[in-house]
Amino acid sequence: MKVKLRKNQLAQVVLNSGLWDEGRDKTHAFVLSPQVHEFSVEQAQRLSSLGIHICKCLEGVGRIAAIGANKGLTYGQKWRFVNRLLQSGVPEWYTNLFAINPAAIPALLKVDFVEDRNGLHHVVEIDGHNTHGLGYQELFARMRRLTHPGATGFPGVAPFLAELISTRGGGRAAFVFADEERFYRPEFEILRASLHNLGVDLAVVQEAETEISETGLTAGGQELPPLLLNFPVMHHNQPVKTKLMELYGTGKIDFIIPPKPFHGSKNILGLLRNEEQDGEIESILRSQIPAESLGAVRACIPETHLVGNRHERDYWQDLQNQGGYVLKKAISSGMKGTLFQGDDGFDQAFDKACAAHGDYVLQRQVLHSRTVSYFDCGGGKETVAQSECYLRIIVHFAAFSGVADACITAKETRAVNGGKESKMFGSIVV
Image (cartoon, rainbow, N blue to C red; front, side, top):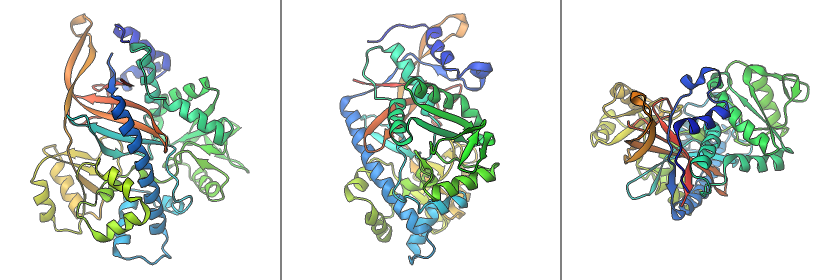
């Protein structure tokens, strides 16, 4: 059932979450929408099945990365090429951790999709190392329960995490985030509050607030539990980073999202697609990934090329001249490092990509706009307006279990990312 609401009623949900406290309605603003994205039962089932195949692919890529990171193993030119792709943009110290639990994958896996005009979902990014978005999933689930009470939604990220933390961490876990991520702390606190309501304690602490002790880590004088959400990219607290590496290497701590930044690299999409049908790369992939899972995921990834200096620039230029591509840096945050043909700076970035060793992908665009409703208070009168927007569907998969939740970011431009001009809302299954 859908209910008619005023903007202030929906805004109150956001205010109650604390996201807009202390003037953050300016810095963390987004356009409120009374709608939800509807998945058919068939679409939801397809997504859940695809999520299991993605998990199997990431397990295999983890094993490949572990082999590639071991300098003592004998492997040929293509193994070195694959290894370089998986390490592109990854801080070197992370590579020492690749061999620990090689097949470990994120227990909660973020994947970005675009839906085409036929209702099919295309994987445009596997963002498995990213913790951003978990709090927003919870926020939009709360908004959805207000706008569509009684509607069927996905189970939710907080219930899944609560059960996982109860099982693996005795009801306690820590979320240490990098100093550069402090902008996202209000979102992280939404997740913490949701887990608290489910009887689970998630300590949310900044890198600068974390210290080492004889047995582990502390924050605010309190010992942190041995189960952590992730291992952030730390630049300012070397002692804590070193301690985390030591504790993980000796099995004294564990991560819900393992320290494998390549799980968030666009190069994974290019590898899995293997556009040039390279036989040696295909053999490497099939040595570690079940053929059924590789085929299922490959079919859902848009055409994605691994751009680099192994070909002359003219080769990539001829491909680019076909039009309809977007250039993406392998490791980047949000829309940073993403340029569409015709954007300012595209040609310079393309030149850089062609000269690099595999730091970029060129991906076929999947563009399909939909009508999105949102609250408009222009002229002092509140109305529900509509506009044609491009949608990005952010799905969090519970590993090997299906969809935990899905939310939407919508924007009138092709560069769909969070921000004050973006419409953001949850989803239901109908």
